[in-house]
Image (cartoon, rainbow, N blue to C red; front, side, top):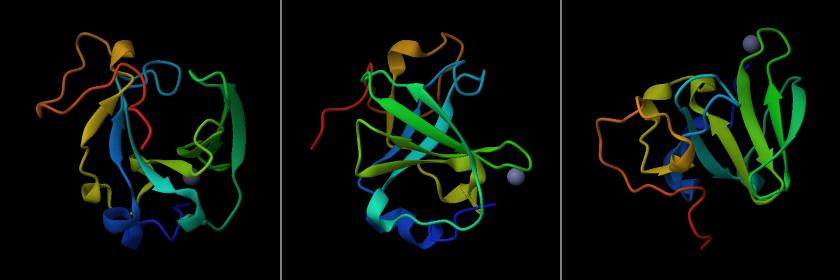
Length: 128
Ligand SMILES: [Zn+2]
């Protein structure tokens, strides 16, 4: 299941595009490629399973998974109520993803380095 409204909106409605260096808690991998999108522009069809965790801001973050294959699809951070985090692996065309910053760099594994030099933030960037 892929949210149908994402693809045409990624490039011009998304206020930022990030690679989230969120270590083992989410995926067990070095980082999770994700992009942020205005929540009011986001919609999806179908069902999800969800799981709530406490984020770094101490607010709740609800992550939604495909109920069939378990793929991580999107997250709704309570601390950024206007944003939805879309996990790039769920896009119909992940090649549209162009990371511009690295967040949660403080949690990065030493072996997990990107080829591109991107601005890094220990946690999240300052809010605009
Ligand atoms: Zn699935």
